[in-house]
Length: 129
Image (cartoon, rainbow, N blue to C red):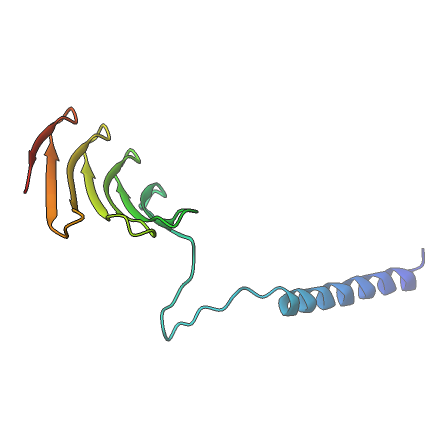
């Protein structure tokens, strides 16, 4: 192979690389985010700690249940908000380190809110009306 052929092949490779980069930038663009309105669209958002561990999650399940959960350092749900899409009652829950409910707040079919508390073993202790 002559020196001229080597330079020719290098020139073709450089031109092909540049054209490929331009084509990729034009054809494969990420969806823009409107910084003026601050609108971001996703099925799930995750909150992570400084070490990268999961500390929170906001998502919508396939059946439409919108949920927000906050996790402790062991990635166990400690507080959560659940809002069903089908009109069932929303719920706020606080759990202990074992995952058992400690407090659940919601409202009844009559529109009156109520709170239920549980002991460390998940046994019902007290409820408002």
